[in-house]
Length: 134
Image (cartoon, rainbow, N blue to C red):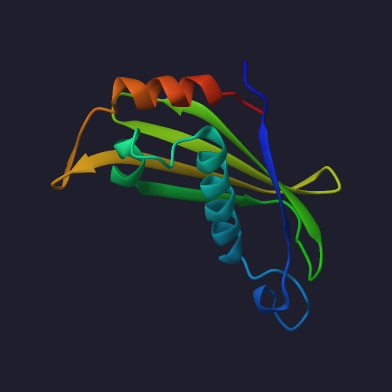
């Protein structure tokens, strides 16, 4: 089983409200940054895997447990708990000092001309190699 991918991110001033707490929509930005780094580290951002550019988020959910604040150093963990025929899910856990702050789930579907299409065998293999659950 693959290791859980982790990338750091520091909370910037423009991401917090007047009390210094991260504004909730920014957790989806953090999830997107982590997903991009995850795909880069997995080698998915090459011409070998056109599925990457043909996959679109069709569902995004977040569960908030605690708040991040200005200048917090976050560890963002990415895993692949589900791979379907034409879709897959990323689970993104946002942590500070080991404490789970927010869980984000992103479901991607591969689509061409507005219709879902099966993931290529190569892309499914890549996702399977990096798949793990937290």
